[in-house]
Structures are given as structure tokens and as C-alpha cells.
Image (cartoon, rainbow, N blue to C red):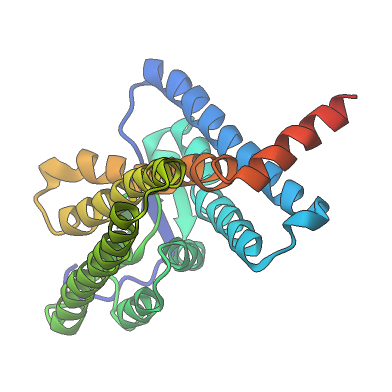
Length: 269
């Protein structure tokens, strides 16, 4: 079987390993989390669109963030919720659907080089039909192949992961070093408290995203006993930041917070 090309277009999604008794509580929990993510991000978009005072470049940046979070959560959550209520043997997806989902998963990860990784993976022949993940991504597609000559994919994947992590951490370190320098030289206590509060919450969200993505990437190359940890990290990457971003970047911004309160009370009135 390993030397044959797998031509069947139907894939089996492994999904989360949950018992029948725990499937409904988990479904309700994830559904509430998804509704919270959608409600907060859609609400933030509506406030920014309807309030003319928020039509500034900085606020359009805040507009783009919830839009990205909505896409990042929606690309996996509805399907994940369906699969939780299905038997493990009934979690099927076509290969085309899997590739499309993997594409948008990595678009959410905000890296064009990941799209190139998917292109490199699609050139490989397939001999398996089991996706060892709750959703499709490049690493899951890569594991469908039994080819031995996949050095290019492995080297490219590891190198880009390390490069992106180093550049990302380096840019964050430089940015916050400059902010810290300004705070040290500033005698404005109100300004310093606001900067520390905003930066602290941003670092928390950033670290969650970074740790989840690194764990997810490296555990794909680990023994099978770590598969549950990898699945948890991959889901956390798609639900925790989208849930926290509206609170961190939206409600902590004075203008957006005031307009949100005004918008909510005006609607009630």
C-alpha cells in the first residue's frame, strides 16, 4: 500500500477523542465559546462601521483584526462542532474540502510561506486517508503521503517555522524595548499605567498564540502519544486569541469602549 498512490477523494477526520457522555458537554462549551467569539467580533465591527468618529486608520486596523478572527474561528469551529456529535467512523471530508480548509487555516496564521508549503504538499502522491487532527492543515495533508523523497517539505517547514518565530520574537522584543524606554523616561504616571496595561494584555495574547502554534507544529513530528496535546494546542490557537482580541484591542481602547457603551445603551433605549 505504501508504494501506491491513494486516489480516493474521501478522507477520515480523526477529530477529538471524546466519550459519548462527554461529547454533549464539550459541544455546548465550544458552542458557547464560538458564539462569544462571533458576538464580540461582529459587535466590534458594527461599532467601528456605524460610528463616524472611529473612521480613522488606527480604528480600521482594529476593524481588520476582528474580521480575521471571525474567519479563523469559522474555518474550523462549525465543522468541529459537527464532528463532536458524530461517531468517529462518520467524520468524512473530501480531499478538496480539506485543502480549502487548510488554505484558510494558514491564511489565518498570517503567513504566505505557509501557502507555499501547501503547494509543496499537494505535489506529493497520497496513500492514506486519515487526517490525524480535528481539522485539515498542511502538516495533516503532508502525512497523507508515503513518499520517501519529502526532504524539501521537511526542511522548508522547519526552517520557515524557526525563521518566523525568531523574526516575530525579535520584532516584539524591539517594540516593547522602545515602549519600556519611553515609559522610563516619561514622568506621566497615567501614560505609563495605560502603556503597561495595554502591553501586558497584548503580550499575554501573543504568547498564547506563539506557544500554541509552536506546540502544534513541532508535535506534528512527535510520537503518536502526544496527539491529544497537539489537538488541544491547535484548537486553542483558533479560539483563545479571537475571544480575547476584542477585549484587549477593542474595549481597552478608550474611543471604542465609549462608543460601544453608547451604542449598547442607545439600542436599549
